[in-house]
Image (cartoon, rainbow, N blue to C red; front, side):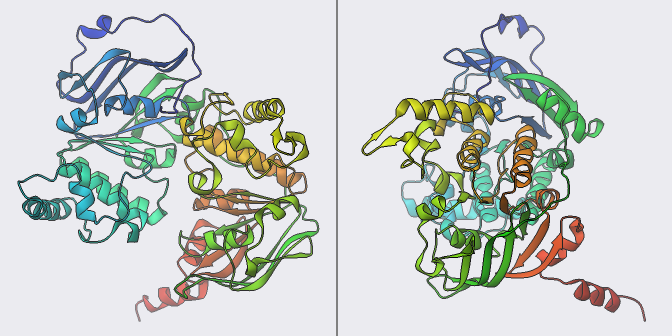
Length: 542
């Protein structure tokens, strides 16, 4: 079940038939009329009207739980609407499943890619639509068609490459090609930049613009308002299951869209007082991490984090930040070096005991909430005690105090505004942003001495981002040490008191939080100020 459930209850509405007169619009690629979807007594979508013009990029924004993904799942046939009508190119359609959606020209690129890791690009693209009496004949035709599509839409990729060997940006291209191969004229993209670097996101936008210019219609679901402003022609705003506005992007602003999403004024910048660092909580000395092939991922890194400060680590994804965090947290083994927590060493070269580290005052919000932060088949109550289940307050011996766990989970869900606030709901049924809030609540409420936090707002809407940033600052102001890794440079700059920049596994520089985006960006690319000045000088006329 999709997790984008609005916190709504029954209310009267006009039936879909009341909208029918004059509803059909032959100039639109998509027209949704009076769409309703309810899960139990909770409305996920209530009386939704939406018109998307042919050959446009149309944004859909809203908080986590606003109903965006549910609406798109109805359009793609994953769910059936309880009421309402769907017109595609002016024709009334009954989209019973995703195969029907594909047959009428609708494709979807999911936030978590639907690819088989050990299959090649070509095998993934033809999977389920191989065609031909023999597989070889179908694959040969598919290879030719894939080349045509890749050339036409600048989606160059090796058809024989294995998915597991491709970076996420190229995996996303495979998903787009897969939809185009199936004849999609309408492409739905759900949070497409959530796992991309800034450079990969820029390349994706160029691809989307080219698709639009060649007549394709793009529906873009995202929480990143600057991306909406940069790429869309129109944007529709959802709030608690209802469509509250559709505006021309050029006539709007980030501030207006944020207020429409949340229903109140939103602080887009982090308000904080200067840090007052205390004693040294974490000290990293000459830490090196190599993989099984002998490749150095973290190269002789040294730094410290003090009580009452946030130290941010900036860098393009894949430059060692993740491995550095995982080594400190005891998830992987370091090759050499030392890490001290409150002056006592952590056995990082023997792969530290993560449970012991929790008891010593370290909390960890991992970068990948699905792989290492949650068990999505478990309910919220069980996820809320993961790693802490042996605490006395949860029971003793073989028996857990289920009442105490339920009560505490409910308190955390209320404090972190998790929607829906149901402690017994399986985590898989929460939206990504609400899953993130569950992890943050579990780790931040343990009163840690130091919090390691990776990508704290990945896949989180703007209202929740504001909330998470405030909680991190509150934790800092309470005298806690925070080590932050984020691919969002704005987030690093606004939260961090000190910024370390990593490139190719090394810390190549340190700046304070007031450093410019340009300066940090050059360091992230491995270019020093001196290098940049020298290159500019070489380009000057003699």
